[in-house]
Length: 264
Image 1 (cartoon, rainbow, N blue to C red):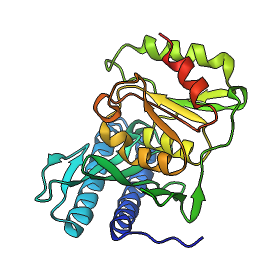
Image 2: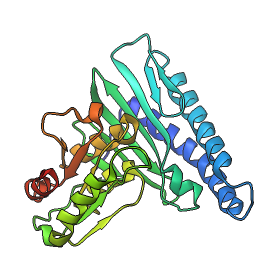
Image 3: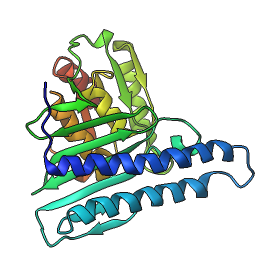
Image 4: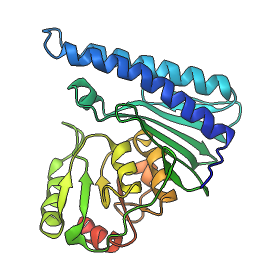
């Protein structure tokens, strides 16, 4: 199947790859820093800011009228109020910091409040997940679909645990204790953008998390939807992007999965 990318998606892919190369170089250094007394924390922040600078440079040079919202560099309105980039230069900082090769660059394009393009790039595995509204979801050059599983017992789910002080962890632990008896396993890999894209790729059958920021999930949401997945708020009437609580899965297990997680 031949792929035709829009100019915007090409810009996003180029930017993600460039930032990814910079982060991989820095990641090799972090691995060496694990043994030093000073510790890798400051270094990871520098790597994050460097990647943010690359993305800003690439995306804003190509589209100077668009707005910007980044985890590291905050928000800025563009002269075109209908479009903005939503960017997380390094999703999975804690993994990066510990020398765990599971982190990603995440870029979304929002148009009139709707996510229309998403790119999530895992440079350590050279896996580029991307989607454009109405054009399907792709992993590198291969079309992606969510898994076809309809049986909870055979399904693997991803979860996110709250950071210390973020909110009461008991809620999440209760969710896990309700789900464990009914599924094949739960994974907590610490990178929301990759949890979402792994559902899109059929690697996970579902995923849920609370308290996410918009840049953690903006790109992943487009990719999951374009791969045929369901994305919904944890509480039915909440806005996903406003509240940051979401539940995602394939169509086959969604109702059963959501029922278990949403039990009060």
